[in-house]
Amino acid sequence: AQGELGGPGKGEIPIFGGTDLKQVLADASACFEPVITGEEQVAGRVAHKIDLGASKCPSASAPSFNGPRTVWIDKETFFVLRYTILHADGPQPIQNMEVTNVIYNLDISDEIFTFTPPTGAVTDGAPSPEERAPVNVAQVVRDLANQVDFELFVPHRIPSGFLARRVGLDLLLPWQQLSIDYVPSERKEQNVPAAIIGFTVIQRKATATVIADQIQGAEQADIAGRSGWLKRGEKSEAGTGTPSAAIVERNGTLIIVFSFELLPEALIDITASMEAASR
Image 1 (tube, rainbow, N blue to C red):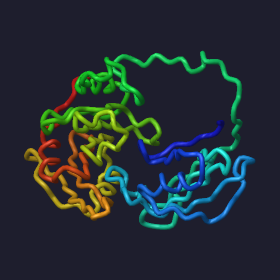
Image 2: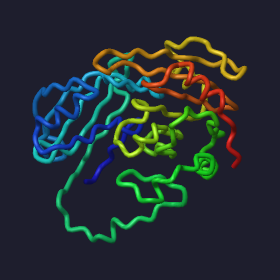
Image 3: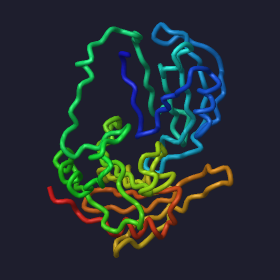
Image 4: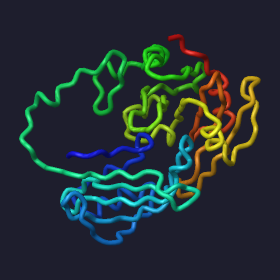
């Protein structure tokens, strides 16, 4: 497929599976309330236009992206051809991605798909024995420090039984951001968002605008003697709701630790343990 398709973070763009529309809608229902509103042409293909509504699994790290969404999927292949997000606080589009040209089933040499990950990289998919070994978070963060223009930090107090599943830069975002996902060790290989079963640490460059956006609805909190913020999430019986988050600014870096699972006090403790990673 040719064109650009990205999003505000891992898991934000729904890449639907299944071979029929019923399965597509079922997949989307995990975090949305999808409604088919018609058919339109996108990139020369007939596409289902589906109104997803606002996310039932809102982002703590990018709350402005929690507004209503619309997705256009190829009627035959279910490939996402267009995706629009409206700002959470108003009707203006905050992000729009659209495929301009798509060709399926091209004859492509296997050599095109040969890739050797760089040292310390964490890959998705079936893990090799080496990938099952614990991730050296401090080392990976140090290696990534030279790729961003803000200071990076490493948490040193992790709840018992949790380990890092992913450490990396969120390359689809229009800004530089580091994410560290922690999950229970026995669920490391499950394809479930880390914040649902564990917690995620987000780091990005702190600006007045970014801080104001992130601390909406938060209360003041003391985090290791520093002035920080705490968001107390809410969870419904259906399993939807908003995550809790501890937020602090350190040396020009905004650190956000959020989770649907952990108590707010646990998130404060993790955030308070963050120490600078030497470059």
